[in-house]
Structure formats: structure tokens, C-alpha cells
Length: 513
Image (tube, helix red, strand yellow):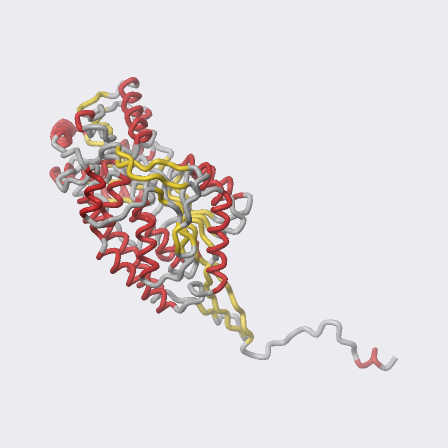
């Protein structure tokens, strides 16, 4: 018995040898003829399971199940109070199973278990509670300005949604898609990443234990080129929500275009983290480390381009590098670990390729920059800091999605804002300053969907979240979700006997001839 197998046995967690989809409330049967993908623990490279890939026939079956569930009305026509109750029970179950869910996610994604248990698993429960609250207070509209008429505006669920969840924060991000879709009465087919399927399946089971009707959520598994392509191109899908990379999003959008299916994309970022010379220095160092090394650097909102003002640059660089070198990198199951492995081997190699290219292009390596083979066969990369003189380097333009950051020095405030906007992305931005004028200029001049001043990674679920430019289409958020996942309907009712033209009526004179 391997160490992982022993760990699962000790926790009384049963992980099947072959993981299959979930359709109509039950696990899909194992098909000996189906393609399989190995699922590995990134901390050691050990295979922990196989994933059965769903082909177009299996995807079509899942979509039809979601459609039948929507049409029968068990969820789509359920009263708001019933949907709220299911969401709240599910949130409670997620919190009660937080340790198990954190372990499952750690085993697939390699994210530090302590980070998962303290932040991402509670976030999944919070997403459900938040939307339960929101649907209880949202209202339609009534207009009476048109004399003799009353116009009411209502919403109804859009139908069946295809949800594509990413591998870097499976539960936190899949739960946001699920909550914002199902809250309004839709059903869905969810495709998790083929690298991180386990925790999402457990969450779906908990939702059904909480009372979600079978068939409301259906899960399909497999690669983007097979399973994802079949789902995105399905003519029976009414909405597509995708979180991931911009190259894959282009394929999803092209497939959706054939059916004119509306899409919502949350994509990548290459965000600037501006340190002005009047910042609270210690907080700026602390926040900058959190911004780039949280989630082992595998977050779209990473502050991966640090821009620091010249008068404090030497001090900041020295402090930041010293703290980076002190980071605890290692086993993601160890509560002391701050930075875990990359989520899968091909991504680990991709990060190393970005580092090698940065060196070739002339970036100055300050620390890290190498695989940590001393930690065994896991997919570890040393936290890496480069100093650069140009924002045009690939390191500053391409999303690395790992524990790799560039530092560039600027002189004038306008230079910092210009550098921040010199990107095809526009997801988030950070700045550290004690000047109200500077923080307002930052808000006005930086082109990004979310801006943080003197804080790392805070999220108010009431506010919209999404990006400019190649960072996405649409926004997450309660009102924005209602607009995307529902169809709006106007009903105009005559409340007076307003005159109606009598077309085609024969006059008395004409009738006597």
C-alpha cells in the first residue's frame, strides 16, 4: 500500500480506480472501450486513479438528461424558498466535509491543503450561501409611465448551461459557476478539468444529498479536444460559462458561434502590482508575496509584474528576494507548506520553459529559476524572481501561471500606469500607496476589471468580477449572473379600455349598397 493509499484508508475515503462522470444522479458505468487519462498526485508524481473520457455520445446523453430535468420542472419551477434551502443545506455539508474535500483537491491539484481548508473550501460554501441570499431579495420591475398600461419585467431560467471549471481552484471556481447558474432555476452539464476531477464530483454528491433533484447537475469528464469540444458545440446548450485560458476560450467561442450560444469567459491575466514610494513598506512586501505565491502562483489574479518606484526599489527588492528564498516549498499535505508543486507535469515543464526563455531574453535572475528535484518526483519549481528593464519581454507579456515574478523599476507615476496597461490582458491590478490622489489616479487610469488598493486578494461577492481585453467576456456577480443565466421578459397589460383601431370595419353607408 502506497503512502497515498494509506492516507485515504486512514481517512476512510474511497477513491475508485476508474473515475467516471455523473449523470442523472448516478455515476456513469465503466466502459472498457473508453479512453482513459491517468490522474497523478503532483506532490510525488504517483498515479492515484484513471479518468474515463466521455465521448460525444456520452456528452449528448448528459445534455439530454439536463434538458429533461429542466423541462420536468423539479428545479426550474421550484419556489425560491426551496432552492434557497437546498443551497444552504449544501453549504453546511461542504463545511462539514471540508477536511475530506481539501484532501481530495490537494491530491489532484497539489495545492497546499492548509490553504484549501482555510480559504478555498469555505469559499465554495460561501458561494452557495451568497446566492441563496441574493435570490431571496432580487425583484422584477414594473413601469406605469405609459398611460393605460402596466408593464412588468420578469426573468425566467435560460435552460441548460455548459460549465467549464479550471484545474487551479476546482472547488472555489466550479462552485461559483454552479451557484450562479442553478440559483435561477437552470440545469447544467459541468466539465471539470481532466487533471482535477475528484473534489468536484464529491461536491456534486453533497449538493444532491442536500436535496438537489437528480439530473440538475450532470458531470462529464475528459480532455478539451474530445469532451470539451462535444459539450461546447452541443445545439441543446443555452449558455456556456468557461473559466480557463484564452487559447481554449477561442475554440469554445468558435463552437458556440454555430448555435449563437451566449458565452461568459473568465480568462487569464498578467497583472501589475505597483509599489509607490509612499507605501506602507512592510505591508507592501507582505501583500506582494501573497499576490504572486498564493496557490503556488497558479492564479489568474496573480500580481506577476511588480512595478516599484526607484527611490525604494533597492530596499524592496532586497526584502522581497529574502522573503521569497525563505518560503516553505514542499509536500502540499504538510500544514507548514506555503508553496506546493505545479498541478501536472506538462504545466511544470511549461513554467520551466518560461523561466528558460526569460534568461535567454536577458532578464536578471535574482533567486530560484530551477526545478526542485531534491524534493523527489513531484512537480516543484523554486519560487523565482527576475528583475527586468523592459516590459516587452515575454516574461512580462505571457501568463506564466506559476511561482515566477518580474520586478521593474519606474520613476514617475504616469510611467507606472502606462506599464500596467501595456498588456493584452486586463483582469486585475494592485497598488500600494498612502496617497488618496495616487489611489484615485490608479482607479481612473489602469484598465482592469478589479483593482485593489493596499490589500491583496480581497473579494466582495456583491461586486462584479471579470476582465478587460483578453481577460474575459462578461462578469461574475449576482446581478451579472442574473442577466446571463436568465431570459428577460416584458409583459404589457392594458389596465384601461385604451382605444383600438378598428381595421377592416365596414361603414354603414357601404353596407346599404
